[in-house]
Length: 140
Image (tube, rainbow, N blue to C red):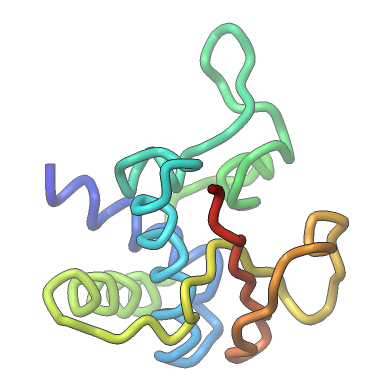
């Protein structure tokens, strides 16, 4: 079970941030962890990573996933072995260490090159590498 969780998180780090610094990759991983803690999202790392609108068959609808790499129509198999090993090491480090949340509770992010519609109304918490991170306000 832990191996599956580490693999899910490492794949997300690889596809979302493999070109980022260590800090940038940790931040992307932290967003997934933060979502597992919040009751608005699934409870496990894999469920968060693979959260998507699906067809009745269970197959994800293209471009309707929480993380774009999962349903962009491209292969989900890492091709850069060194980058994937780095993503896995970062994931293991995050899960085994008591690392501070450098995103300040972020649950969303996007690259600085875009401004998605969903960013409106969210609270920016950090800019790390080429990503901007956002926190959601708590529900009461």
